Amino acid sequence: MNIHEYQAKDILKKYGVQIQRGIVADTADKALNAAKELHSETGTDWYVIKAQIHAGGRGKGKIQETGSNGVVLAKSLDQVTEKAKNIIGGTLVTHQTGDEGKKVNKVLIAEDVYYPGDSEPKEFYLSILLDRAKSCNVIMASTEGGMDIEEVAEKTPEKIVKEWIDPAVGLQGFQARKIAFALGLEGNAFKEMVKFIYALYKAYEATDSSMFEINPVLKTSDNKILAVDAKVNLDDNALFRHKDLAELRDLSEEDPAEVEAGRSGLSYVKLDGNVGCMVNGAGLAMATMDIIKLSGGEPANFLDVGGGANAETVEAGFRIILKDPNVKAILINIFGGIVRCDRVANGVVEAYKKIGNIDIPIIVRLQGTNAEEGARIIEESGLKVSSAILLKDAATKVKEVLS
Image 1 (spheres, rainbow, N blue to C red):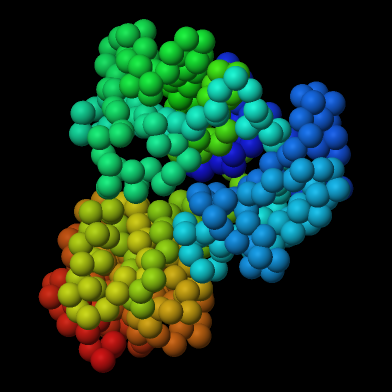
Image 2: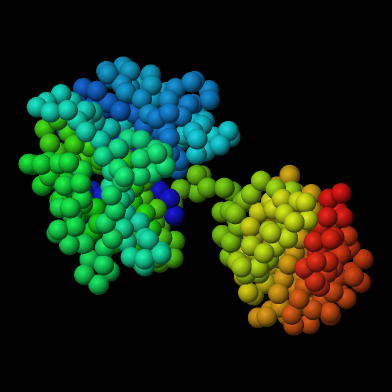
């Protein structure tokens, strides 16, 4: 589960990670009040205004309606009001949002931490995630903070250092020091980075997160180490242990169809194709998408109804798929292992009749327990539904309806 930057920073602060202080606001007036509060607390006279959406590249992104960047600097209180108005309520388009962009409902008003001092501020990259190949967490760090880490990995991979953490003993002191050394730090900045890494790793483990990405981590001109940005992804499977974190979910940032699917107990991911697919089992769903492509189509979604498919789940799946105007056909591919194929077939027929006005062809491929009985129910229903038993037959029928 993704969360906003301001939420991520609240989590980090709770575990002792030093952060760039900020206050969230959803109107220009509240943004101004936030700036005044920050000034009284920190003495800052410049303010960073950051759009809060679930996407990266905000600083380079543009608000469609005003042309403003998603992250801007205000050098006075008057500018805070003006620049917040140019962001709040607008549609921010970045390289991660696609052309449709995302609506900005809130901004984070943050203190200026790039102030002059004894040394130049320096940006670093730091992240923690699970390395599935090695079955342990890995800390990744780079001196090239503030940049797209994918670009750094592609062009200068030697600038990324990795430290794998043995799950039996956890993060060791020498490992935190090794990372700080690799970043070229010394003196008080070195000590602060070691403490920062320890606190960050503690927060990562305590929240059952699947990824922490701090880009940039800033060494200030007076050698403090701060998280200027924070991207946190929480493990959905562990949220039952963290009711407070589950409440941070922002449904307005998620695809409405995916939200609806989750409420119905379905696993759904929208894609850009023209053939909707409804399958039981993730592996079979992947194979079904391959079949669609081999038939000359493109999958419009990934939809797993689970092992206990019934009339209710089939109906919910139909409704979600039919909301996509690009869908020209639907392929239902069910293996009757836990569930009987005849029960699924009855569910398809019942759901079809209940929804009504379905004007696109539907192919139902049933295999496993009572597959032949299921095919007979489909064929005798009198509905605009055709059945198949073999994957080859399903692929042929998809190709026919698309041609």
